[in-house]
Length: 609
Image 1 (cartoon, one colour):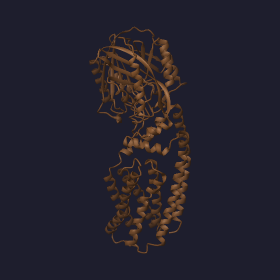
Image 2 (cartoon, helix red, strand yellow):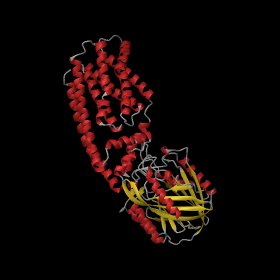
Image 3 (cartoon, helix red, strand yellow):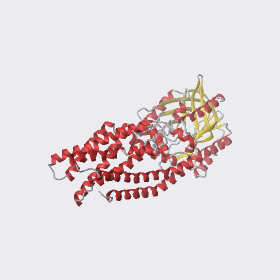
Image 4 (cartoon, rainbow, N blue to C red):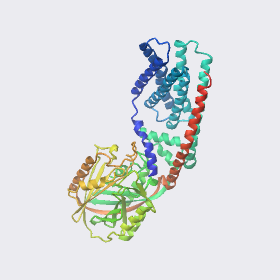
């Protein structure tokens, strides 16, 4: 939960990265803003005035020349340099927008300097411009270093392009058209002030980054800036290069996958899989899209539910999903089928609720705490549930599903020692171990829900519904490709389908983390467009009923060996490292920033000129 929270907060960057204006709009913005800044500067500062209109026009041309043209040149040059040096994440759109923002910051300081000069009758314009140039130099250097995956020296040199061009253009225009005496010692002082102040400020930034990067390198063997830049590349371009970085902190584990297979006369009709592997961390990284990727590896209708697992069991690469596929297919080769199953029965103990159905020599347990809000069930807890239910009910396989269908941002995981664990154990003890069994029919239906997308919490697989009919009882298994469900929405769905030809229904989510690249981070289904989602559920149930036919059923349990995941050790290490870095940054960042800015300010404003 904490890991998802941390990464989802950073995922909020995607909203800004992907919605930056096109290059032409940034250029238009640079032209207009620089013209306005120059006009305001002339109207406030230049004396004697030659007239408002003339000041406005001449000032606009001055601002466009000194700030606008140089910023456009800087946007083009920085992108070319970073691209040539194999940097990432900086397209012409990004560099031009950054130039526009930096120029605007500088313009604000220039205007403030003009106003103060006018009020106190002391010319501080040049010093204000130099101070602003130092600020945007530090800002752009930090952005390039943190996002482009380039060396600090390259970032520092590249970040200096815009302020250097602005200062050079200002000196040239002033000397050629305004003040021909503006040369010699004055230019030397300007250059000296700019260089010394830039070195002071950039060293403070370098020291800060090195301080926060040290724990990541020491504890996890990864560079924090590499992590950030590759993560932004994933959000921006869909790059999976970050998975290579995850390999440095991966931990191989053994886990299990359980499944129910339904077979008609033509072969397997449907497959219900519950892997104890977590579909995270987010976006398309690692196992985030596991429910869809794994389901698509089979030629028949396949539902991939959320098995007991937390972020400790996030696969570090998409390729790790192949190991789950192999385990399931090996298990299917040895499965035994019969045409018998029990009716679906619900049991409850305090907050814990389960729905139980027996298939041949195995059983399926759907676990939920709804309407209480709970997040992932930890693997050890799920393993205990499996062992206990197999012993209590004398079955070969127990397929545990975390329905993951009741969520609030405060939802906690079900971990060893939590009271919810004992509630789950108690409720399993109430299961009737020897129910009557009858012939079984199954009908299936899936819909990609194309009218909805990640903004509504819907992943690539949309909705999958399976109707199981036993002895006249029809049970709807409804699975959304989503990351949990807004609290209360499960019950709303159940109420909305009572008029359909079913007797029982359970609503589940896959816990896909492909929907967690949005600005709000957590993105459960049911936040928006509930009525439309419910209509999809109703349609899927009706269509699945039409598909009902007699089948044979079998269950299986297979071990997944050497699955490379984040692992409990590294997950804990990552949490503690992030926590320590945040704690240190709250102290170090203000101290370094304020100290360096104070020294820079004194040097520029009281160092002559």
